[in-house]
Image (cartoon, rainbow, N blue to C red):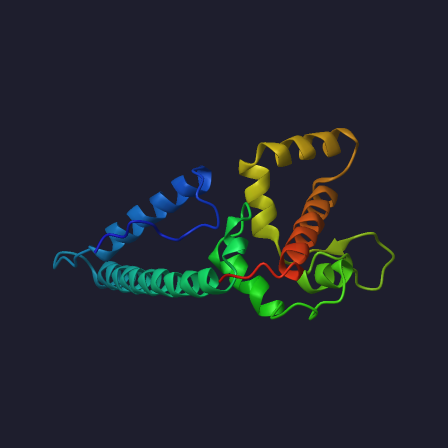
Length: 192
């Protein structure tokens, strides 16, 4: 049972991730079709059976994931289709955002939205004085924009030239995305 795609991505652009996923799909298909040979020793036969079983289980889970994602898309399109129009925001990110933001007024400010989204700077130290921060959500959207959106790539180049680190640049981009999503959700532009 060949699979068309090993996993779905939040963006529809082609890239190195797509090539890696097609390679994964080919490996899963090969492993799912392995056969045990009488001439092999017990260890090799056991390994083949384990690989085949795991590959078939992966096929089943990927099929289930595609079906669930289709159901999620239907729900999002009926509730807030404008979210799916944002660059880099796919069904999983949109569902995550909507779970955290159920209605206008739930989040009182852009800063609170950033904190809820996990892009506000949270100290990530173990009692030592450092300037390291842990960044959580919206990573997928930021990575998609960096890879596929020319304006974002220009911003990254400009900030890099200004001496900012990759982490600082990504935090700024995530904060920008959180702000844009907050404004979109608070505007109340829900589906008809």
